[in-house]
Image (cartoon, rainbow, N blue to C red):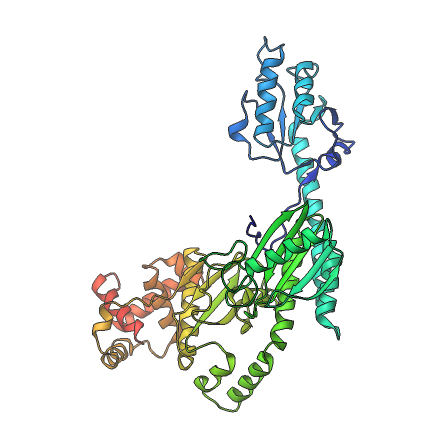
Length: 509
């Protein structure tokens, strides 16, 4: 069964055991087990437990000085049980420290490692376990730097390919070259529009599997197997935006393009390096933009909508050109890392199902048609989502999303939605509620900073620190502003009735 693809962040590559053995400063020597160049380790772990199985995650170089070995453990029984448990836990290799407990590696341990196929490394007396662990982290850092540089170069080459006169074939050629396999663009009906590179493995079997995987991520209602819910891996649940599988030793991945038109990118490669998912995701974003501009005239329609807005048309007049329905959701998102660029913003829009993206400093704003795809938390982003609004209320949705993002950052939540649940406030006619809000908040209404600080402070239950985080100001600034509000409003903000009254007023201001 296809498995969901991992988030588009290059993970830290594992370290080949051979690279660690090649470090002359360590003096390590493999004395048992298979000498496979493909053997890798993900981390180093020291344990003197007789049964380390419960403490292993898999992929470790397990280091031991043999303290756990009983004096009577001369037979194979103890070492067979010990090594078999390491292999069962997924350990990659065993490092045995010579001295101070043992002068040599026990012969029975060597035989057990040979029997179970576990690489056994002798650690000389001059090499500490901490030195081995440090060497592993250094090699991992070097590998990550190399992989990040490869990903960066691939992103640049893909962007340059997208600017060529034949952008779609150029992007596919670069993607096939960078992943060392084949890249294909599938149409909404499941047919192959364009491709580049050679298909590894048995062509017929792998080609059919890649086309089938594309059907898994194709939105329902777009031809082929993806149109009737009968394709492989499809059911009544939401359609995944990406999926991966392995067939005949070939790694497959499929990405639904963010245009919502049913185009899918498929990638097949003989190997899967840590940064390949990121590279393919960038290719998917670029192809989303390229196919979106030419599918059903959507690019021209958005251009017409922009011109009409600039010439004074109301939002409700231009909304039909955007083909998004009667109601919309505004999403504000802030990355967990550096400020977003155009590629990151486009990738977020593609994941949310909308090409209507705006980068505003550290925040990306996305206008999403309501009902097509419910906005969900995105890896690496903190999101605030508005209630569903009609085009005439886009500005209101923008404010709601901004406030929801502030609450999400303050509460360290991945995503917060604007609360649109009906409550007691619904019993008061809107006109009367608005008049009450104007009367109550009149002393601070002319100061947006005070209004927003009071609103955020009340929404976060009077927390100074969380309010400071949400507003990106110092906590003393929050205290000063709230004290100023209390003075101007001539009220006690510690009184729960007062807080409830003010919250009602702020909700209708």
